[in-house]
Image (cartoon, rainbow, N blue to C red; front, side, top):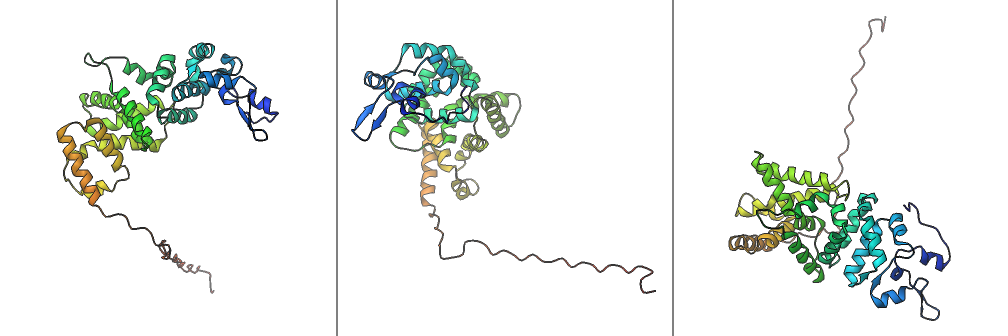
Amino acid sequence: MILRDNVYGTPEEDALRRDFTVNALSYNIEDFSIIDYTGGLADLNAGIIRTIGDPAVRFQEDPVRMLRAVRFAAQLAFTIEEGTRTALLAAADTIIRAAPARLYEEMLKIFFSGEAAKCCDLLRQTGLFAALFPHFSAWLDIESDGFPHTRFGQMLACVDDRIQQGDKVSPPLLLALLFGEYIDDKAERLRRQGLPWQRSIDTAVAEFMGETCPIVMIMNRVGNALCSIISQQTRLNKIPGRRPEAFISRRDFSDIIAYCRITRGDLKDVAKQLDWWTAQAEQQPAPVPADDTQETQAPQRKRKRRRRKPKAKSRTEGQ
């Protein structure tokens, strides 16, 4: 694997170190021409993703290149060249050699690409998805009560639609939408074993994080926010409940509402609840911006000096 790649050289040497031919094109500002050392312009016009050099060697140097090949092919509606695809299929299980934190960033790029459904379809075809999410992938392949798990695909399409319309989706909401049904299934199994509702959600999310993080490192704060989005769904049923203004002021309130609206908003009773909460949120006063002319920090208290007790006189003192 390539561990350090900050070697300088000629423009041609730099181009030959890149991953795909379409990524190795340069622009000459002197005569406004395209500099092409790898045949990338022909591949660009033909809509082909092709590695530079031996694809098996390229994927061994950096396994993340396999994810980039899938993302570029899906986003650009390109075809992965046959030799590149064959090498990718053979090396798919080596994706776990990459750093888990880097794989998390690459997966966010895929899910937020606007073509997540196409990307995940290619990931599953090539075996990359099963290598990245082995437990979840195995669960997807098993039918529940005679029916396949279709919500994952529906949520991918929903996320793509939002991204293409310019809407923002937070990472915790993204994970809740994609993996929420899987986590709910775990929680239901735990409740049948006698765990209380809240504890079943906490334990299910912990299990999911334990399965996923060794390969795709999800940050703890994102995992905690994911747990909150799922566990707070029951709070929406309590209208108004205790201190509704405190619930509305939660930082993740919009994600809690969005998750419920996307997953269960087609139910009439749920839609009415969501409309009530949305109306209440709109009536809340906007936060007052801080005045720069006023002192925003609380004055620091002076520390009191502790008076030392006088030393006790020794018996011989003064004699």
